[in-house]
Image (cartoon, chains in turn cyan, blue):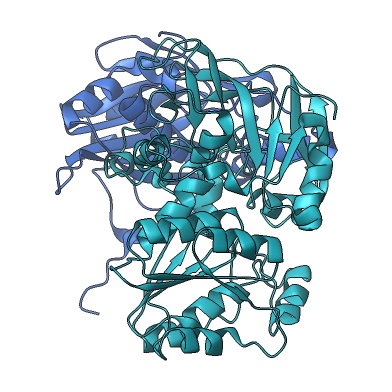
Length: 394
Length: 223
């Protein structure tokens, strides 16, 4: 099969590799019909996530048709159409039973690496470094899916792939970010980043009762999409604009009730951006926490900070005094995907949301390396790239 | 601080040589059962321990552990285990570069549903171990605590870490495999999945990650 491989920092190549096979009784093989590049794939592209090796197959947002199932699979059969969540969960451990699927105890064969870095290992993820399991990802024509009775959701409607593909990550991730934001009816919610997760967080915040959502970004096309979700668009790159002051003005002086950092470790910023870029480049810190500092500073006293943006390592100069001084609540982490698949698919089926609204680029698998660069540079007004792994040439 | 426990001086269990089969122990080679760090003293004993909570009842976990012939399904590099008596078994371990390690093992203490203590009684390696099964206080299954000691040189220990896993890490991984098998019926693996060209550093690191260590088959071969 053809597969998108990480070959080194900013080096993505498409290679012909063997088709995946069933390795364990609960495995299924999925013939992938649509897959996508996630913002978090850009952290891999830029080399910020450790334990990536050349040859690793990328991709954790994918869907397709069941090609083959292992002897232990009960709920799926060949020909079923499924969307696969990016967290691999066993469904049987204490954490899965507590619906903390991204904390699954049993899915990471390389748990010892994560234990060394984080104390304990979370669930494995597809195509996201050896520390996170080393599983081959879904930017390919086929993928092996472990614990196939626990992860994939069977699709029994005629909705096109593009409307349901994002159940694999960004739509539930944006939704859980809004849920973690602890929104009370009428609350004001500020969302840093109007990329895919930030947009789904903004849309979800309204679903959960927010009175006003403010989206913060600097790209006009992204701010326009945020406005389409009903958000007030704040362009932080405008001259003389101070985000904290602007948010104060927009919230009657109190600050937003909830702030969502949908940016993560590779933030761009006006003030401390250079400081963190230099330190990150010198390997003196692993993450550039500009957005995190701002959400902590901006949130109202006793408010909630929700962090769907990915952080990987050790952060420098985080204003923890402000977090403590205001008595804020912080919630974060990889999405507990299996919790959200059914209810969020229901919302799509009922027409409450069409998740395909943010797709800007559709490419064949051979064009993926170029698409990574376009997406990273936010060139061509790129917001979301969807891949047809069977379309070989443009 | 009201009480300081000096683990170096606290025996974790009765010295195995006082067990029922102590008469087979070659004189002068007893394992002490006391705490030792990495080979930081002259005893030449590497001690490893790991604790996990498994969402299964103690009896079923004890039963799985008590049958040593199931060990090849969940313990790394164990090629075969043959019961040679009610309390004794013969073990064959396949190490990197086709080195085979064989020994005989005897159970010293057997409390059904609760505890097993064993030690080697001759062969290529001297080792002893203890596993206990305790109900989790909040009803989350069983707390399984594993302690093993190996009498090997520091050089051998370090070399094993380079070529695969150190004995200490192997103990931790084996208990993890046991938990995975008990809770999910299989052992998570990526061995045999496709990937693109690894290049030189990539292949080297596969070994460092422990990924060239064969994952035990779990139920793959018996399903």
